[in-house]
Length: 295
Length: 193
Image 1 (spheres, rainbow over the protein chains, first blue to last red):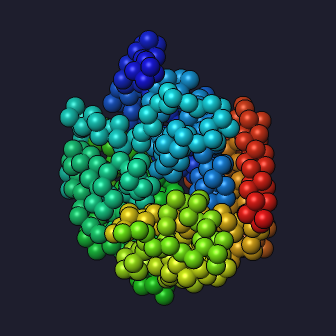
Image 2: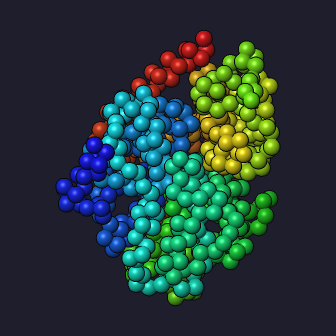
Image 3: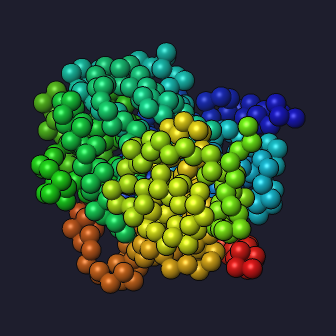
């Protein structure tokens, strides 16, 4: 039975390069550049993303913080839809990834699964886009290597913790570093790869977000990184959007561009910085990129 | 050797935590690795190690009133590093849920307010609508112009959806909210006895 659950992708002619795509709310609004660059990269790499029909919010940290029923029922609804579609479910948002994959684990034996529309047995695999691209590294040939670009790969929390749903090691993950090396960039060894940026607190406790994000950026600057690469819209918002308010009593000002890993991958695949919306960030990455002849 | 036991009669909170999280705080030997790695510890009344100790001592009320259970970012660093493999983040989550179920006033009102606003908006539209969320949060927290600079810049860069998301199947989402709310009331009644 389990084997048959994966079969529809073949039947419908999609093969293993077809995925149901769950953009998540942020990628439709403040993180549009992540959605746009992810789609461009996938198209160029022959990965077909079919946006999940009528997907709804995974509940993010607020549902998780408020109700354990809602925390599973909301992503459970989307899992159910993805299981009907039959393709593995891929998302580029670390928060959505975490909520969906944890729900996939918990619906296996929780009473809440009936709430989510009988998500039973045949749940499709939930993957983060980094995993999908990592599985294709061997055949990835960059158009234009990002030679000389020093990148601090920032994983944050939700891709590497908790262990049950992690895509890599919790202390020194390598999946994004590998990708950066493959496209010719230089991933920097640094100490803050998996620290927390302040998560969903930028409105309620901006002081905490600024303190945590500031020390991450200082650490990236200290190892000489030209930019920080992220795989989560929340990390991006905290590190980039709130950067102007950092410093002060917690130490010096810091200016480090923060970009999505898909934007760097996109550059190496030959897309222009403008196609990838690299000009839309609060801290402009274009000067750093053009100093390396990349923009 | 049998696991050490928390004197249950002294704390219904500990009992709820053990049952809900499946974790036994009595197993904690107070090494402090959780607090050492906790990014939010400097902003907490009690660091995670102290929360675990308070539970061991049956000080349930104190724990429900501390801000730590709200400030916890659920980054899972404590859980992934605990040498006794106690899921401390899960314990924090259980404590926060118990505070909510009991109607305990949140020690961090704005964090509770943000979660409420976020979920209200998701219930209404089926997805997060950032513009409405920011506006509602600002109004209800009494800081109507907070983050105005960021808002203006986002709009200027075309990075903020101005119209609400249009999703089919919002009714289903609302039903999930209603059922979760019913479950919360039911469990809340049980918790309050």
